[in-house]
Image (cartoon, rainbow, N blue to C red; front, side, top):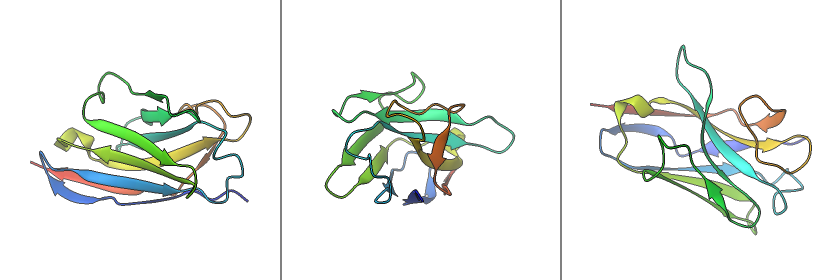
Length: 124
C-alpha cells in the first residue's frame, strides 16, 4: 500500500519561510513519475502548488511562481517544497500526491495517492 507522509508544516509570521517534505518510499515508481504539492484552505477547493516530473522539470501556477520551489531526491524517495515570502493567504493544509494510474503529474481531480497533509499557518 502506498503511503505518502508530509512533514515540515508549522506556524510562521508573514514573510517567513518553511520547507515541507514528503516521504514516498512506498511508491515504487517514484524515480519514474511526476509528483505534486497541493493545498486546501477551509471552505476552498484543493489547488495545485507545484509539480515536478521525473526529469526534474517543474511547473507552478502563476500565483505561486517565484515564492515556492519544488525539488526531489530520487535516492531518498523524498519530495520537497521550499516556500518563501509566506502570506496569511498561504494558510492551508498542504498535501503531496502521486498518480495512482500512470506516471503523469497529478491534478486535484485525478486519481492520486495522497498524504495526510501538513498544516501551514501564516500570521500577519
